[in-house]
Image (spheres, rainbow, N blue to C red):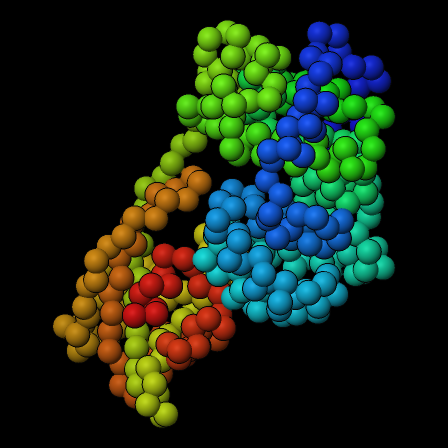
Length: 365
């Protein structure tokens, strides 16, 4: 049977360590993480929210966002009913903003297509916007006890080391094979509580023991089962030959400020396109050169432009060099090239709009 893009073998492949799941479950209950705010619940909304926030984001960062998000959107109905700009504003600073847009779309799909209740099967969960196979498995195992394995980046590292799996994960075939092995390691008779401990144990082991560099093999509860450790070099797993090709770009941002009628300072912000970098967020107008930026302001004001310190900002496939250029603008005057998607925003109200993380310090100054 196959579901959610995750092949499930009819029989477990021979040669897998039979004691892996029991050892991991016992270790997690004894030494795993238990105090995180999204643990101890089987509410799929809260689990889903935490899983999306934790994608490519440190736990320490999510700890400050998660309670604020729940306070504003305590359930899936309130999130679905909110304007997307409110969601983006609250997400501001977490990065990977497509997650926030998909979060909103997913909440609306749950309300519209599932009568406000998250589906219980991982195969159904994976059909919702922004929920991949591993996230679907996490929700289904944590909340509904489904006997299904997660396979995020940390778990790929754990399992490829455990099994000395040396096939190239840059290719689709080995990825499917690792999914099959991950599923085969799940106990076929695991109770719901066991699935919670097993799934959390995989996460905890990858995050705290089987780390990318310098893994703490002496502390690992399955060290005696680990073929990667036995090989003498567990860090050579996982194998992935394809490397990201990073592009380097220079962006020039025009920070136009003016005094408002009530004595505050306003900044002119454009809403970014719905696709691409910082999609849907508010940002000062962006130009690909200082010459293009200068051409966008009246020539008589060009000498008033003030260059700030450039900063580097790394994205998954791109390295940006951001150059802020500020301009003091007359009160009551419209911004140059003002467009329908732009608006004046008071500095003390910046938290009410979604802003890219590297731009926030400039606008808060």
